[in-house]
Amino acid sequence: MRDADVPAAEEVARAAFADLDRRAGRDPHPPGPSDWAYVRMRRILATDPGGCWVAEADDGAVVGSALALVREGVWGLSRLVVAPGHQSGGLGRELLRRALAHGDDAPGGIIPASSDPRALRAYARAGFRLEPALSASGTPSAALAPDPAVRGFAPGDHPLAAAVDREVRGAAHGADLDALLAGGCHGLTLPGRGYAITRADELKLLAARDDEAAAVLLRAAIAAAPGQARVDWITARQAWAVDVVLDAGLALGPGGAVCLRGDVGPFRPYLPSGAYL
Image (cartoon, rainbow, N blue to C red):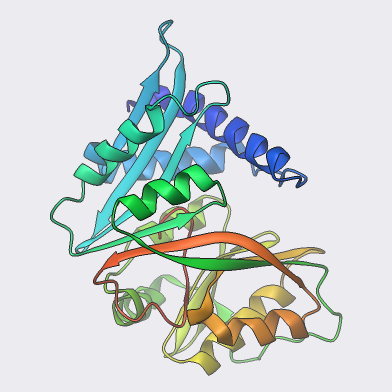
C-alpha cells in the first residue's frame, strides 16, 4: 500500500461492509467521515508498512486491502476487505497471507472478525481460536447515569492506559490511542483503574483492571452516546458487559467473532478496538 491508495482502499472497505450487511439482511451501519478512516490507515501505514497491502484489478483499480500491525509482540489484523465482484477468487487469501507474514515472529495475535463465513473459516485455518461475539445496540435508558469518578481522557493518562493494556492483552496501544482521538473519538478515564474510547454512538475500546471498573466505564460510555448506542465484541470472556448493556436497554444480537492466537493475556475485562485491536 502507498499513501495514494488510501482513498480508494477506504471506498472498497465501505462497499464491502455494506454488501456484507445486505447479504446478512441488516441495514448498513452509516460510516463516519472519510477523513477519520484515513487517519487509521495512514497511522498503520506509517508504523507497519510491511503489514499494509492492496490488491489491484487488471486496470490498476484497487479492489482489496489488508492492514496489519504489531505492538509489543502482539500482531493484529486491522482490516481485510475485497470489493464485491472480486471476492472468492483468492485475493482475500493472498492479502491475509501477506498480512500474517508481517507478524511471523509475534507471540500473540488478535483479529476482530465480521460474521462473513469465508473470513471466519480463513482465520480458523490460520490457527486462531474463534470466540463468538455479541453486539448490543439501541437507545439507552434515560435512567442510566455515569459514575462521577469517570472523567475525560487526558495526555497524562497514557501511562495508566499502557499499564492496563499490558495487563489485559499483553501489549500497550501507545500512540494508537492518539490516532483514535484524532479520528473523531473521545476518551474516558476511571483514574487508576481503566479507560474507554468512544466515537459518537459507538464504544471503540475499553480496558480495565477488574470487572467492576469495566462496568463503570461501559455505563459512562453508553450514557454519553447521543441517541443510539452500540457495543461490539462481547464474548463469553466479557460476561460483565452483558448486564450493563441489558440494564441500559440495548438489544443483543450476533456480532461476528474475536479471534485469538498465542499469548494475548487474559483478554478480560477488555473490549477490543476494531482498528487497533
